[in-house]
Length: 88
Image 1: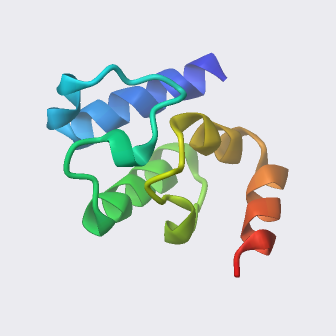
Image 2: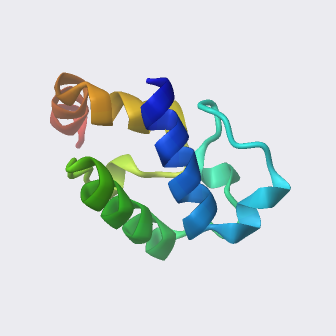
Image 3: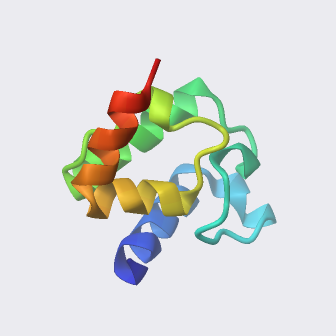
């Protein structure tokens, strides 16, 4: 988990330079990232797909999603599948 989180944090810092104003941890919610919006979610989705070979649907990259949630989706495909099934 630590390596995935570290790589994800680096990506977040590259995608969102204004994130320097907050401390990024596993508990950081996407909504905590300054200027996080739907376009930012698309950019994050693309980063994850290109760097981790995991396709996370946009509706799972909402403002309440934490970086730990994303790491769980990346490292545990079963959690991603379960989350996708729970969607309305």
